[in-house]
Length: 87
Image 1: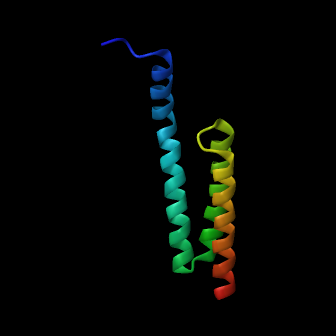
Image 2: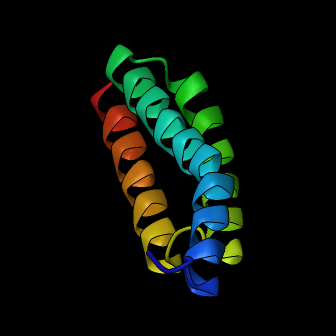
Image 3: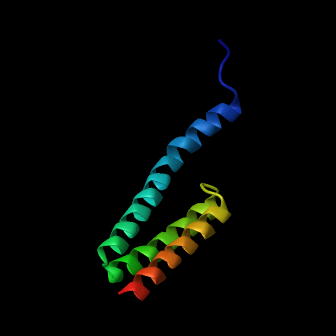
């Protein structure tokens, strides 16, 4: 069996390095939507701001696509506005 190519080795290193950041983004998203569903708008707004910052950083580093970051933040804003108008 031949040795892995340089690209394979680079991908393996990037996967390990980026896994924690992707997990953090998913957890922030889950926490945000839980707060919105509970009606805890103050906490939801705080989580939205943290999430936007983390998404933008991840997009800059190439961990996620910039359009994905933008789409996610837009959906957070929509959910927050809907919750505010409902209460």
